[in-house]
Image (cartoon, chains in turn purple, cyan):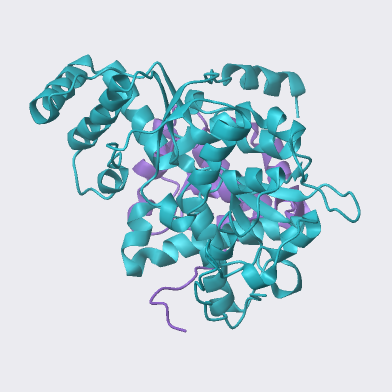
Length: 111
Length: 356
């Protein structure tokens, strides 16, 4: 039957089934990630974000939800310009966080 | 979980609900979606609990549908609301109770806006006088009808004929409670338990013997949203929201869903049919859906009303599996008969979701 509209795949996440191993490893390297309040200032000022799908706020959310691969793919588009570091109201070294994401998530053996 | 922390937050969101003498206003759409709910609410509160509920035949819509659809500006909606308050005062009441969650949200928003911007209240007061020659008097208490049932949930439990338990085994029924977004998400202090720990429906479930299911997308919107639904091409947003909720609650095998909003029960009920038609998936047992009931309908079942007098035959998802579980007797031959035995007609059976 054609209803004229359709269902999008569910974005529901079952946290009990999510492995947070990599996120926990990242937190050891970057404890500041826990004080992010998801204000989105980093995303708003992102140079690469104007042309590509890059958002540190979303990356942290993805990592919390076990979507490591998506977060890693997004991190690979970062230009490391550091503008997000300048605007972060919590003073998080976001540039270093992005490097740590690539480091911690890119190599399982390092965890 | 830190219990002390939860108790502190809970204490911040206690709501004062008046004991008696209420001015009741109906919903625009609930009477067509769930035609017996408001009648049953008034019967329970007036005749079973002995409370004074007054209805003024001149009350109108709150304007919420037009307001949220951008068809009228806020000042117009506020003037409509001011007229409702004036009718309450003229009728000699000061406790305002509305049946609709959208209305509750509009009333709360209006009162809070007037508190923040008194000059706007003065402007609306003048609008009301110019258009209707009525004097604005604000209610002393504003409550949603589910607050009233919540307040008297233990009195209802004491008079209950049936409880929310499986009659054969004594197992508490697993119940999903779904609270309309406009109940407490906009103004958390105006709802029982606030936005994060709303207790208005959970309290009813616990008092009547059921078990509340906590699932990941418990606080997710049902997906109704006026803008999502009114335009056909946007209905996929609404449907996908509902789908996400059902995918989330499915592993917990709920026996039924209780709601306190006009749109939520309608869409959680009807979209199960659309999901089944589009994906072939059903969420209840044996090919049925999960029954979705309003809190008045649940209170009616607990009190022992005839399920067909509660209008349960007008739900998309068949309610018989729930009635069987609770041990509530019903006559299948009377399902589609009106009050005088008049044949109401039988709906066409869907392909992928069991209907009977």
